[in-house]
Amino acid sequence: MRSSGAAIHVLVRACNAMMNRRLDRVLQPHALSAAGYLTMIALRDRENNLASPSELSDDTGESRAHMTRICDDLVRHGWIRREWNPADRRRVDLSLTTDGQRLLDRLEATHRDQVQGVHERVLDRPDRALLQDLLTRLSQELSGDP
Image (cartoon, rainbow, N blue to C red; front, side):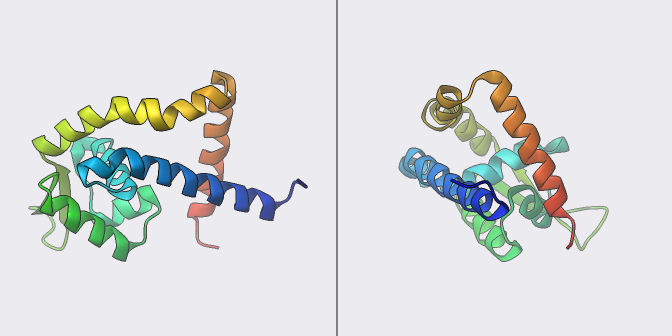
């Protein structure tokens, strides 16, 4: 395959779709989507386990409208909570519940074996670090408005 921006774009999208399908199969017994799981991971990794929906949208690459639906589902299952920010009444803060954290704890080993294991089988440690660095740089560049 010829190296080009379009080829890279196609490959990244295809890999993302396949990784999400694999992750969806792992998460299906828990009534959790890949987008919901990744949103919970992003929330857990935030300082003080707090984020606004728009911050989570930026972190995950999901649209703001889709993030609202994802969060509605996570709240309905009792895995995250919404609270008005006491310092800014216009801001809604999201945080993981104890049940949400327990679910993440249970799923991480399965996720590591079924999804992350692919990275480890295909890429050695230096290649994984390089790929993460390259994707981080691309993400930073793409996050700016054109």
